[in-house]
Length: 248
Image (cartoon, rainbow, N blue to C red; front, side, top):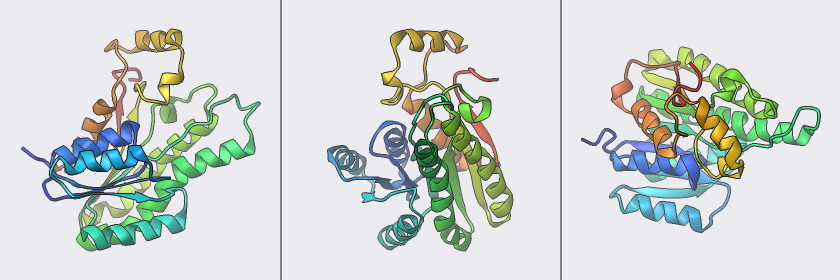
């Protein structure tokens, strides 16, 4: 059964990693996909081709999620191309990890703008569309470090914690109009970001996970699919931890 037949989903930062897997998962359940990244490269075009082969309409857009103006233009273009937006997945994110003692203002501001301001930008831009439809599902990708913190990630943790507060506030504001807003908090997920960690660090993390394995982008994508579909029609303002039990 296809859970998202003829729905339109927008996913930011989806030319690689978790975002790419989310796009493929939603497309495999019938959603037409609009997705973004900072630049048009071979990876982005490959994802677009992969999605189209799944039998859905898919289009890549060059857009900076941290730019308010870009977000407004993006939503206008997607509505023009797809006629509606039913699902928004705020996935764009970066890290600039270092101890606070060494952290520059630039690295603080960059992470906050890409990770947190982008969620404001896209949610605000898509809100009038969903309010008019009186339906929609907004899914924000947070992190377990936004719940429990992590040494060397004060900027990243703060941005992801901010997403959680934003998610709960928006859920209260627009729930009466049939729009849901939830967050996913991934744990240790194997991606390009985590591949830079040493095998020793990966092994230590894995031993702390009750399920005794790191997560995969597909694990996160399937959680997003649940929140995007009517299977979660009575869930809003929630934070689903996709972490193998790392935080309970």
